[in-house]
Image (cartoon, rainbow, N blue to C red; front, side, top):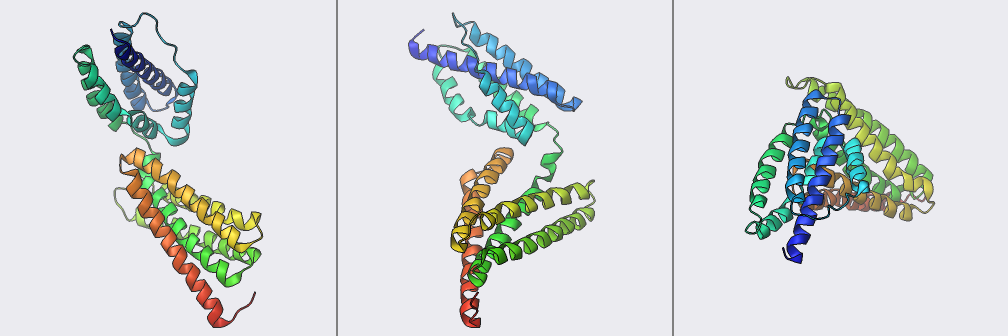
Length: 288
């Protein structure tokens, strides 16, 4: 076996070992019997694949315990579906590597078929309550980012005082949070397929309120309004980056397209509001 083939087998073994360990841990931690059976089935397949690659190695490499802990922590914070999709995200590269060694190791083709079929089917069966309300979270974040960044940009030029901007932003944010949560509750309640409209409203409200708090933070920390606005927009961009990545992994959608679209909308509204605030201040001849 050439050094390159040894490297491939070495990496495949570690990948299967990592997957087997993470899925086994997640199976023990989940409270859902349905999800436990699915995760145990995935872990069983991964252990089988690990053993097949181990037969080609003289010395078995040691699994990095930090990687196991890291993926387990991500599952606890962001949910099972996020981690399952994230661990499968490198599949395109793995497919090419499997193809590269399939002639020398026919077992690679069989393992690839198993993983492409079994894991995708099993992962799709995962039941996760929180993800059913992801649309509510997206709605809350989108609306908060667009509405509040625009409002704060307008307040910055119109008021030119961080205490007043912060107060106006806080009142606007809290009122909008309650309004969005109430609207989501009424919307879901009229939907015959929605069993928990209150949960949807809570997800929307919490996402909105969390975004409001982060966007207002610069106006509390800094004294210069324009500096505060700059950091507010930076925070908005980071929120968009993080949440768009989460959604792209969970929904297996394009990250760049979603990020560009959300960033363009939020910042365009902020720019228009900024100009309106500047124009209103000049027209009304307000000096604060």
